[in-house]
Image (cartoon, rainbow, N blue to C red; front, side, top):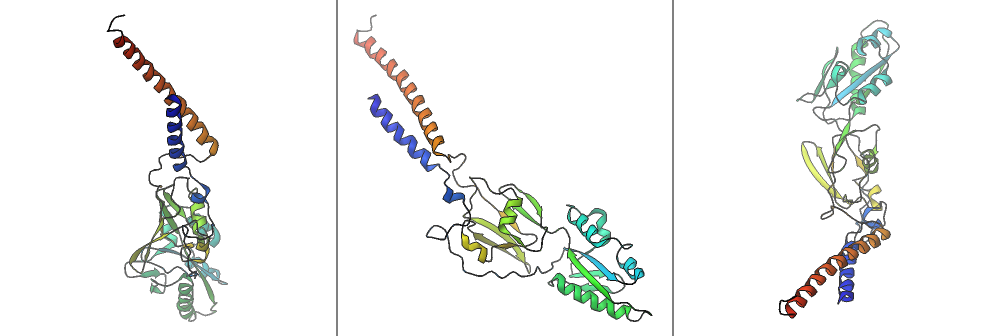
Length: 285
């Protein structure tokens, strides 16, 4: 009886343990597409970010004329140093003085040339726009010196919720989904890689895209690059409050569970034998 119980209990525990295993197939990236891992069409085409209301721009004007540099660049501050300091901050604070907010009408208010409509344009397009407007204005000044303009978005960021939740800075022109996940500390064994959701707002419309990060084809798809203000949602694998990811762990858990089960069974069976013996003797000792 005990042997039969051990056998059935062992099979039950092994089945539960194996069903809880976190296999390499569930967590590895760059896997070949098959019937479980989707194939993504080659739709990769990186598009420059289009400016939106609420974005802040850092604009630096270069010129051979030091007076022009000081007039437009907060006393001639070093461009790369200022940009680095602003991108390292989670809030703007005093740097509001050196950035230009895109208002509700899609404009920035730039010194001497006034309001400039920039919503929906790329930073490169705004660069040429400001160079043209400044060129027209400064051409009327004796000893005119041509200017060059640098335009950058400051405090570009993306957010992650569901795993390593937080807001992270985009510190390069093109950031991939893998770089974004790495910045967030990657995913644990119990976070779903096959149903990552990307929430993105564009032209006033919010879209939710769902993709499988395990697929090798993702590097050629529309999901590969992230944009400022993207939200990445990563859910926990249903039913996985714990898991077993090594064979040795399965064996250890199974052995310990069987031993505990046999211990309980022995106690119960001993009690039953005593009861049967007692009543078998007519209730007398």
